[in-house]
Image (cartoon, rainbow, N blue to C red):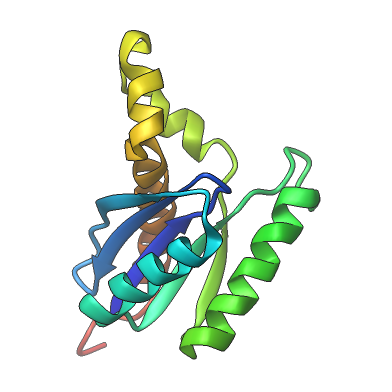
Length: 143
């Protein structure tokens, strides 16, 4: 199992990688407004890392409802399924960007936000949450 975690944004797409060991690690973000470049970048990571499943942050409203951004991500997730033929899991991402930013000194946040580092940290949190849940519900080998 090889997982790609995605924090979708219109300017930057944060990425993270994880496998059956259960540890998510950040990958360089795709920092482009050009949608075709974003898809080329995602395709490249899926091929290079031999991804078998994708986990996408689902930006629900604080009350759990779906707003315009959540609907945009749902369309994005469906395109991932269609283009790559992989299972795509939507994971509640409320407050992950805040959590990703909280460990960075305020004076450095602007520069790091532009680089995509915060987006990839958010993708890492999203993927780690999914892996933690998945590992805790799957039976151990031999059980």
